Length: 149
Image (cartoon, rainbow, N blue to C red; front, side, top):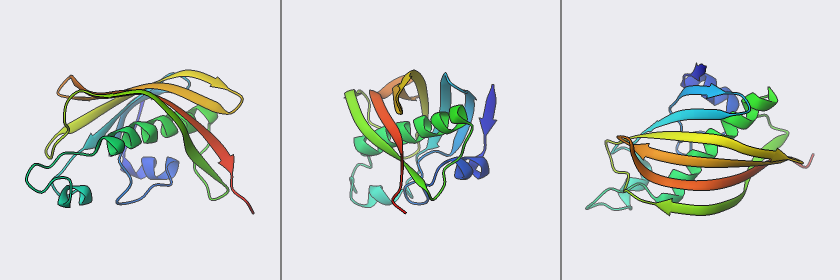
């Protein structure tokens, strides 16, 4: 299996600070699965307001991190990279569940499995864990669309 450092991740994802939520790809197999890492630090911009007295990573950002891992898996599966001519959209989230808060200091390990790819719609099952405990899980749907010229 393959891995990616942040330099290679930046070639696959158009996201940049403060919205890039993948720090490392631990392993991936094109067309099947990816395992990625997000190190959550107290310096994250969302902790200023969520919540100053108890820093908790917002659930929507946990799901976004899972979607970014899914995007990388899609791009390596298509043997392409992000560009300025198209965009990778979220088109659906099903069965999202949040089971454990993710807080400053946590390393969130994200596993995404490709379950289906039909007519440009990618479906995934995703799980985010902290210390082998499930923090969140969801079924994701995404698509790549051309941008208007």
